[in-house]
Length: 217
Picture (tube, rainbow, N blue to C red):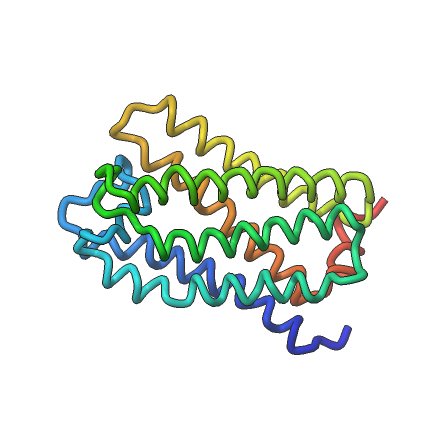
C-alpha cells in the first residue's frame, strides 16, 4: 500500500497519546501536594492549579494532533468500511471536538468542583456530552465491526476502550475517595488510546489492517 499524506497524519494520534501521557505523569511535579490516586486529571489544568502552565506545555501536542488525526480518519473512510462503522467513527470524532473545545473553554476554576459557572459547564455539560458520545460511538463501532469479520479487530479495540470507560465510571463511584484518581484515569485514557488506535489504522490503511489477525476466518 502506498501511503498518502492523509495516512501518515494518522501517526499524530499516537503523538497525541504520548503528549497526554507525559502531561499526566509530569505535570504533578509542578503541583505541590497533588495526590494522583485521589485527584482527577482535570485538577492539573484547573485555572488556579500551579501545574497549569506545565500541563499546557506538555499537552500542547495532545489537542491539535488528536483532532487532526481523527479528522483525517473521517476523511479517509468516506465510501469505505460500512455505514455503521462510519457513523460510529464520525460520532467519536465529534466527541473529540467537543472535548477539546469544551474543556478549553470551561476549565475547572479550582481543584474538584468549586461551584463556579465554568465548573458547572465543565462537569454537567461538556463531560456529560463527552461520556455519552464516547459510549454511543464505541457501541456503534462494535456493532459494525462484529457484524463484518473483516473489521472485527476494530470492534475488539472499541470493546476494550468501552470496558475501560465503564471500569472508570463504576470505579470512581465505589472506591474510597482517596483512590478516586485511579479508576478515573481508566476513563480518560480509554478515549485517547482509542484515538491512537484509529490513527494507526489510518496509517496502515483500514483494509490492510483488517485483513490480518482477528479479521481472518
